[in-house]
Image (cartoon, rainbow, N blue to C red; front, side, top):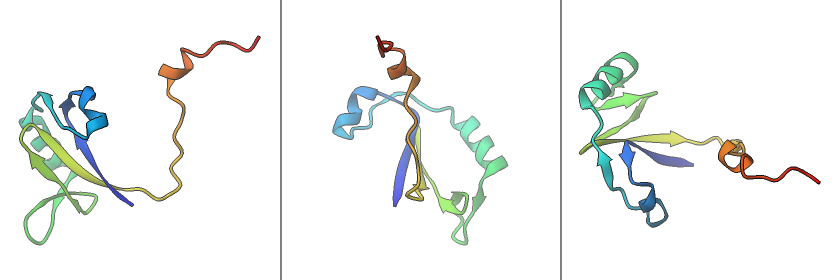
Length: 87
């Protein structure tokens, strides 16, 4: 399954509504420098990472991610901190 990862400084309150509200723009000079170092281009001249086309949007980046169906989701330390020890 392919997922679009939206990378940027986004408002987490919009996540349940699948809304992207940019709180702070990415520094596109840094994004472009990293893409120059790590990315590539496809036959049509589009920027790619790992062979997949990425989208440079206003103030954020969208990168496709192909899950392999075997991804395990580790428990977040945020939740572990709130757990009570066994009595």
